[in-house]
Image 1: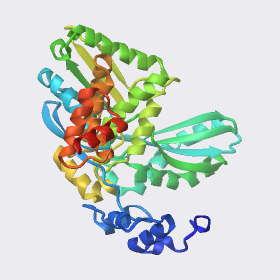
Image 2: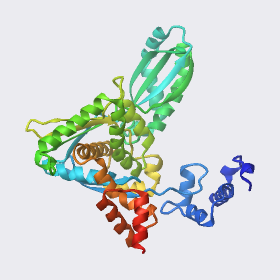
Image 3: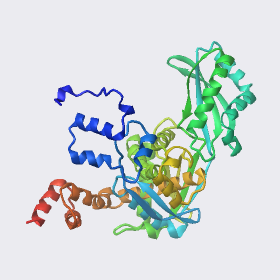
Length: 429
């Protein structure tokens, strides 16, 4: 088909079988038969299940699943499944866990399992008085919300509190109602959204306004996961630097991130390297967790660090993290995806609270390793050593050539595609 004749309007695409969709895409994009068959192979995710999880499925995208070792969390040894495509992420968690294992590992906590649903009301003649009218109907609100999900109520969850704000906006004052709901072992999006939908007509009637948005907030600041760890000076020391020097370098790096959003963006991205890998491995919503984390990092009016490092009483390094962690064990891909189920089994978690706390510990571990590398040898030395194998494969190395080319790249201190291609040519004579 000529390039200028291609059309993305494909009638009935969603009703086709996966193979029919794939054939349509192959014709549109001019895919070679080998690529078509590659996409047709859905690996260890059943094709029928993939077709139910999302729309218009033509294949799956397999991401490597690794295990972080050495992690001791709240006195218990844990193996951490991590799904990521980035080199050094899993290794960083392993290294951080090993270096604080003898000092007790990570201690964690969680503020609760509360989620927020928001109801936006506009065109209210007397917004401040209307706010009071809603607050006066707290018991009616509770009855409507709890009536939406008797299963959640039976598990000890349900409506917990009511907040109403008058928000000044470019479009005039808005009345924003917050439903505070305990979602227990569910992430809770569907539960709180259903409650907001059910309550919306009541809000409109009580206020005389028009309700528009009725949806959860991903700034889950009633569901904060926390972790803390201590690294002794002897574990911090590296060649050419004392433990105290490394400690002070890590603290200085954290101060930099707390003061400068340009640094904080990269600092927190490193934290999310670890967090998102566990969230993805367990079938939870990476985008929701990432949005909540970054919003929380800006809660004070400027964007800053999600972690804090400081000198402990004995001179060692103490590190802490706190961030929203809306994850669950039931619903969606967490319950349906067999790999997610296997990962939860490996973790040994039986509650969403425990999962959230483990994920926070992983984020702190990831950040410690990144800051230690930055404060000492630089981030490239360790990262590029692990990345060298990827470069070797991209250059065309296969089998035993991969290790040999990667080793030579690291030895030369230049991990680049052109260098790898030259080394590969030399190896092949």
